[in-house]
Length: 243
Ligand SMILES: CC(=O)[C@@H](O)[C@H](O)COP(=O)(O)O
Ligand SMILES: NCC(=O)COP(=O)(O)O
Image 1: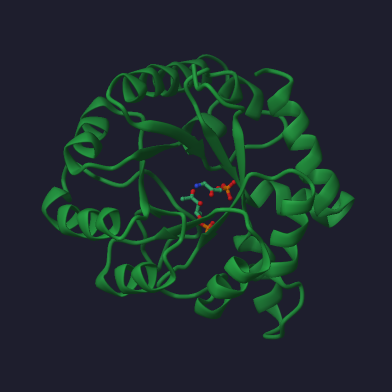
Image 2: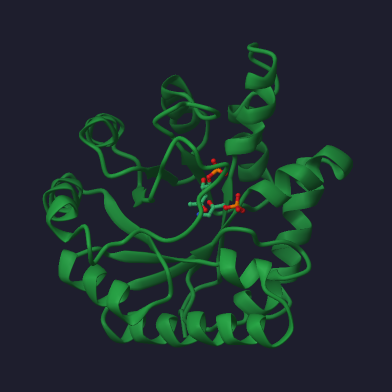
């Protein structure tokens, strides 16, 4: 059981997607971060992609200056992103797989296969006092790799769960629940995220070992209709109803 309340990290990438659609500065992801802070969000997640399709380098400091919420910087395992993380010193850095062609993150990081590339990067981040999260599939081999790498956090990719239905969704849910329990047994804090919505969040939120959910695209979509404040509040309520 995670001793504290299940935290909600709000990913504001797609506020920046709308902003960048016209090349201007509205809507500002920083204003979104401030609203998240005002309505009970527990953290801000921002994915600085190599192609800067949404979050941009200057957004990071503005977000950090604008709210006291912890910033979870999602980043690829590259020297460029390591230097940026060391410069900004976010609360946490979540290492995610990334390629230009993808529309969005398509799966978890291959922490096992990339051990030699990840090891120096993880230790540099840990040494700088940045909590390191690895965005992985709920798979024992990937979890073991994260333990070996010395990551403090794993974030389980919930995309397969989110896109599954019926029996397959139950199988994905059990996989995540089993790995969350194993993570805690090994002293790693388990998080989860990707593709979570009002409709599918509660079975994930009910997993007692999970400490944090990171949710973004759906909330920004809902915000178009009801506003970001109401969207975050509803997601928060749904999580609280099962924990
Ligand atoms: C790792 C993950 O699932 C998301 O946090 C990631 O940010 C998705 O990428 P986009 O935000 O570019 O869709
Ligand atoms: N790491 C998951 C995240 O930050 C948000 O993913 P999504 O809700 O935008 O799919």
